[in-house]
Image (tube, rainbow over all chains, first blue to last red):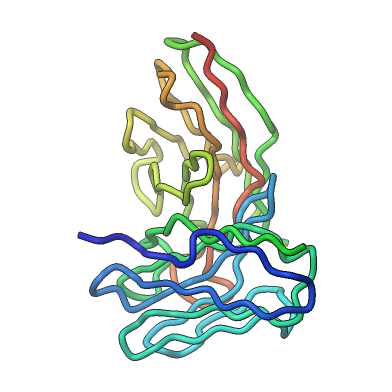
Length: 113
Length: 116
């Protein structure tokens, strides 16, 4: 069975640009959450979506947005990139909106220059 | 405020030696507790979780953790470390259901190095 798939694996962007990160959950999973992991820190919660509705939002600016599609895949969008947005972005999926069902993907490494 | 503290940033142990990684939490509700492991450049793999019941929980790869409510701790242990255990370990706390209050709060991690 395929796990949580994230794309791209790595990318480099310039300050001020926009980026879209993608996540495909495990088949049958209806909830997707996004986390940001800055180097040397633990992951920080950004968003959770369940059944295509936003269920939670962490303490991130409005430059960060996300959505979930009918097939339960998800996109994370970041506008007006800052150097501080450089991080590993992790997607996690679960059957429903329960924390204890999480499976994490390998992440997208974003570097902003 | 809800938080997770992992007091040890970096620990080095010899292969075959025992291991204990510390985790303390501050959480208003009954916590759901987790330990994850992350190899370089990889995502997070769940080692074990605690929701209720027996306070000593067994996980994968020979790891176990003990929940001590009185000490607000959830320390991870392994009796004999293997070189392949070298990685970063994260303790996390959550409520169990979705929403911004229900998602995971992570500690800053403990990096484990294993000496041959």
